[in-house]
Each structure stands twice: as structure tokens, then as C-alpha cells.
Image (tube, rainbow, N blue to C red; front, side, top):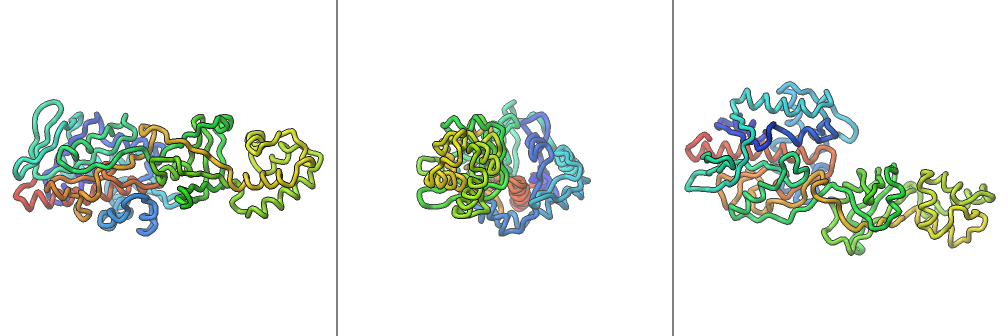
Length: 403
């Protein structure tokens, strides 16, 4: 929608082909239905939130940043607000207002919108692009922007069509898998804690000796393993092969190992007649105490006065680095975004046009770029969409057409 809007503003005659029965289906589920449209982070912070190919986005984000997203939406009648962490939402807390604003803008700009219009093929014939529709018929155009999304949330229409269009035109597409998704664990103990959320904890991950992730925040135990903000963000940093990866949970990130041990000495001394499970209540949620004791090789009923120094040190070490032996990721259908896509080496970053197929442009999640949560993925969609739309319009006008 942003690509169509900007292409029309740039003077092109624009048709938007939407295979769904309505526009912006994926927008409705973003931000838990509130639509986290962008983030106010500066450029350097924005790039830090993009694990793969961040510099490819330099031209797109500089030409259409978060301020441009906000001003465009407000110009179209949807006011916004900024919340914790720079997250920007519509003032109404309704994702539908974002879709309505963009639809209104396209209508006023003269964009022709065709719903239930699924594309089967896109090919270049001479100086023209030919768009074949699944229902029959063909649409000619001087330039085409492919903004089909990835493979996550296929119920919204993201079924990988754009990857096929790219490959049909000879472009390389990197392997696809889920990103921003929960992690599975083979061990049964996380299931015993299903639904338990831990706040102000630190999750770190190493690949061999190299630290690939280390952040403070919130996580959640589930029926399949672990999830929540920290885990979801961690998933975007993990390699496909997890055999060399170790993940650890620090439940006392504000204390050193020595300080944790000193606290245990004090707690055990002051509660010498109590069982371990009772003392653990001062260190973690009640539900976690018995599970944690078992992971330390101890009985929850054991009296703290009976604990040896080595056992106390084991408890301290586990509080600072409880292993989370993850075995895999949840299916791509459950992922917030898709990792992988049209190889950025195939695309000119200053225009979003395919280097080997003049007139063919790509924008959004179909590209091999993905970011953390917080409005960054939608900003990528808007930035690349705006640049692709303007560039597609310029290409069409320069080559003698308006379409």
C-alpha cells in the first residue's frame, strides 16, 4: 500500500493487485491488534535492531524514516502516539485505522485497487513487464513492485509467492525459516512451568566460545519450551544448526556470582530450620522452586542446614547460569517474520530494483532482511515500499510510460 501510494504521488498510473478479500490483512494482527507502526529510534539504533543486512536498508530508511511514516499517517487522518521503547502506535489503539488511512490515501491518489486478484507469474517481455493472473488474463506494466510478504502467518496471504516470482526471473533467494519465534526444548521441566513469566532476567547465548546474544528482559515458559520477548529476539540470532549453541538464563543479573553466594549464605543462616523450597521463595516464583531444586540435583524438602558448601555453590551457579538446552524453533507459520528471502545482492539498495531485471522491484519481508520486534519490521516494509514505489514510478516515466 505504501509503495502504491508513493508511486502515485510520483506521477505514475498505479494498480494494486491484492490476492486477499481485503487490504492490509497482516496489519490487523500486528502489535496484538494495535499495530506498532514504527519506532522513534535513531538510525544507528535502528541498524542495531536488524540482525541481517542492515546496511542494505540505509538508503531506504534515510529516504523514508519513522517521521515520514508518522507524518503520512497523520496527513491521512490517523494520529499516532509514542510508548515505551520508542514504539509508535495509532492513537486509537486500532490497527484497522492504519489500513483505513492507507486505503483512503490510495483512493484519493487515484490508485486502482483490485481485490481477490492473485498473481501467478511475472515476466519481462521486451521493455514491458507482464503480470499473469490466476483467474486468467494478463496485465502489462512498465514496472512492478513485488510486496508479497514472507511465509509467516500464511492465513494472511503470506505464502511465499514473491520468492517464486524472483526465482522465475533468475534471482537468487536465500533459505527461508522463521524468525522471532519460540524455541523448543526436549526436556520436560519447562512444561511443568508452562505459563510462568520471568521478568528482569538475562538470557545469553554462545555459539562455541562466541557470544551471539546477551540481553535483559522478560521470558516465558511454555508447553514446547521457552518464549517471550527475550527468547523471540534471541531466535533471530541463532544459526540453523543449534548443536554448537548454548543458552543460559541469569535469574539474578544485578548480582555477581560471589554476591549471589553471599546472599545464599545469609538466607541459609537466617532460615536454618527451613526446607530449601521455603528459602527459594525469596529468590524466585513459588512454582519454580521445586523444579529449580531438582535441576540442582537436590530435594525441595531438604533442610538448608544440611546443605554442603558445594551444594550451595551449585545453587548460586544455577541462579546465574541455568542452562536452557534448546533443540529447535517453532514452525515458520508461528513466526512473527520470515528470515531469508530475495538475496539483497540481487537488489540495488538505492532503488529496490532487481539488478538483472530492470523494471522489477521488491519491498518488505520478501527481501532477506528482518528485525527485532518494536516496530522495526513494519518500518522496513514502509521504507522499502516507499523507495520501491517512487523508483518504480521514475523507471516507468523514464522509459516512456506511466504504468
